[in-house]
Image 1: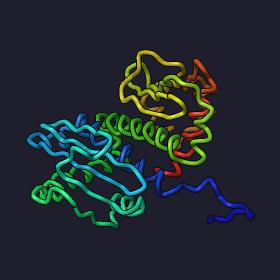
Image 2 (image 1 turned 90 degrees about the vertical axis):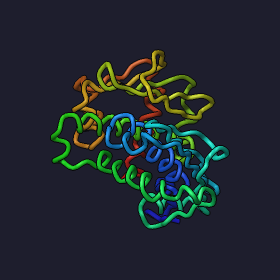
Image 3 (image 1 turned 45 degrees about the vertical axis):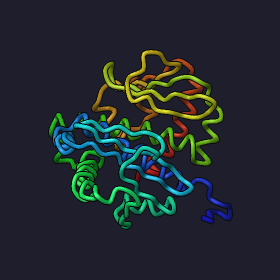
Length: 262
């Protein structure tokens, strides 16, 4: 129990929700990395491997690497390498580098884990925690910001589905799709059904509400906390519309994203 001013602190992050974020928002973002970054795509151009990750009392999903394309699927029934974790804390430890995983299936493919997969996961932080020097490169800046958009959207979904405070906000969200867009070309959708959230990792054609950042530079500054979101709305740099209550409650969940991704 965390105690602040004599009360149980319900606003802290919990390890189970973090495990969902690490699997779907962080490792799941390898699919966008391989799509956008030639160096990453080249690593898996001749691979045909499916890596299942199963966390006790937590998420289970399979990363599929097939001839330069990476996808993620729920469940581990069809994987040919399986990494089991006895708790969300153990899996989160793998992500932060303090726990070494050991496969329960696919020992003959352990070279993929030690070589290709490790190299892929070493590339990802370069884009998600980019240096100021790297961000001076226009193409790198764009790729990094796109990857961050997808990570943030997926984190919103996982927090809305699993986190106690996030679920409270999700309980007020009407069914339908909310669009998060950068300009007119980049965007994702957050689909809500029965108060469960799912990310559409492409620009949705139809949506119930929207939040639109004027340009990619503004989006980046907002993601990095350099610009106040309320002020940006007041200046017309961020536009919201449609069913405002839907966007408002998604924004409440968004407020918790930094807590988990810090």
